[in-house]
Length: 260
Ligand SMILES: NC(=O)c1ccc[n+]([C@@H]2O[C@H](COP(=O)([O-])OP(=O)(O)OC[C@H]3O[C@@H](n4cnc5c(N)ncnc54)[C@H](O)[C@@H]3O)[C@@H](O)[C@H]2O)c1
Image (cartoon, rainbow, N blue to C red; front, side, top):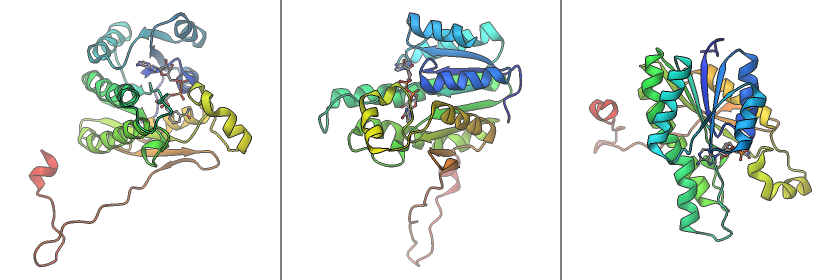
């Protein structure tokens, strides 16, 4: 499903680095863009500068996610694509700081769950659509300095993989992108270390292109890795060892449990 001109897209965390880059790409394709982000003069001005609309949203507020989707439909008549992209990193230097851990999980994991819940009825009313979640490479590979971030991003990858195939029959594609480090405000505290080591980071534009690949790719439950020098590649998950019956044959999970 390629972004058709006249489509309506909602981007959470839309005033940040990836959101701004994506808004520009979508505007070039005549897509109506609504940026949802924590309220403030700067995000509102960002939306104006990009020719996008702005709605205030804290993604950790479940009811507010539904209210934003309702507002998009009221203002623009439909909703075709949702980019659940709002995210934060942990701030604590401790190996495990549970308050910090929960803060990150609430935004990066539950913000995605609430956003999906809010978007699904609107996408169905539009006759189908896409949800693209901004996960991270930290959801596929452990980030030892920020376990809350890894848990949240690994959680959204599991969420997308488990829910995606079930939504596909209704014409809704749920997929994720898993970028490596990219040049946005979120890496400000560690940017100097990348520069000193000559470690390549993605540009926000490269990640925004990957978000469009995920929208157009329409592969339910897919997780697209985005890395400097590699581009956008669907991650191929290794299967887990199957249970064996008493006679040594592979045991197949009963159909009712797979489809319930
Ligand atoms: N930049 C990277 O290296 C990198 C790599 C992989 C994944 N990501 C993910 O990409 C996404 C976008 O981040 P970015 O790199 O553009 O960083 P960013 O800091 O520029 O943007 C994040 C945006 O999310 C918003 N936000 C934070 N908490 C929110 C909340 N509770 N409700 C609504 N909005 C909220 C912020 O205001 C900000 O505009 C995040 O989910 C991040 O985890 C970033």
